[in-house]
Amino acid sequence: MTYPWNDRGAGLSPLKLVVFVALFLPALWTAGAYVAGGLGARPLNEAIHQIGLWTIRFLFIALAVTPLRQVLQWPQLILVRRMLGVGAAAYVMIHFALYVTDEAFDLGKVASEIALRIYLTIGFVALCGLAVLAATSTDAMIRRLGGRRWQRLHRIVYVIALLGLVHYWMQSKLEVWEPTVFAGFYLWLMGYRGLVWALGLRARRLPVQWVAGLGVVVALAVALGEALYFHLAYKAPLARVLGADLSLQTGVRPAIVVLAAGLLIAAAEAVRAALKRPAKRKLGYA
Image (cartoon, rainbow, N blue to C red; front, top):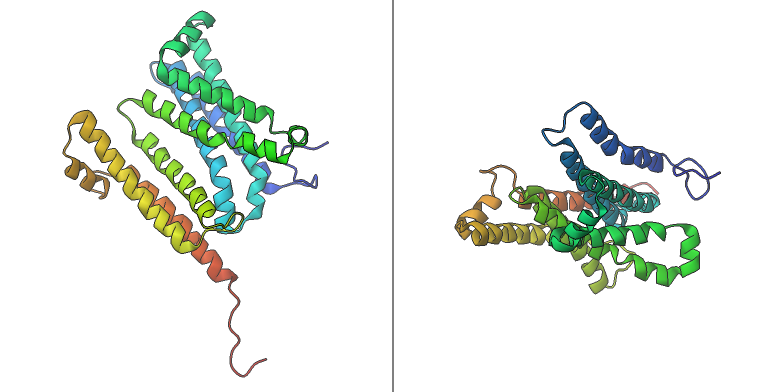
């Protein structure tokens, strides 16, 4: 019998085992906090938000597997991509089930709310997309669809991630710090794939200077985007907000988080390349 923590040779994969266990922890923590009364005045509503948040997190981690595998030259990472994607699908189903519970299982009202509230419509479309991807993630479905058709189908994950991000942003209302960070990560992931395609690298990693440059460009885009949002929504001075976004005077802003993540990935690639480079032979020795 093959278990989720087995590698393709049916042996134990420590990486898959760690990820498999980690996928359960947020749900267990949320359930425990709910029982213990630690989710505030509206515990079920808070549980819905927590599970939805982890859906986005796991989905983005799954999307990051391919670039991180290439940048860090860590091929074993591919073993957990499917597990993370299926985990994200499981969390979005729990998210939806909790929402239905919060509506007292009134399916008519649930359908009406989804039809009338645009952010719920967007979220439901993303849920349906994740369900399709999870249902076609088995080896049997890959063989049935064929490699190319399966890959084309699963490229809709990028659209699903964008829809999930928009849903998260719209329901966050005033607290948009983390949605803005995820928007930056999305831009980085799409930028990385775009550069790999434009440079004709495909399966090879992006050069470290391109990775570093991408991190800087995306961070600037996030800062400008956040400044424009606050300027248009609240008439905040554009230059002042932009300056705050690029400094630490008002705390760690999303642009700083995105910049730090991008430069950290570039630094990890540089260190990996330096360690892999063979040492020069000393003079006088064969």
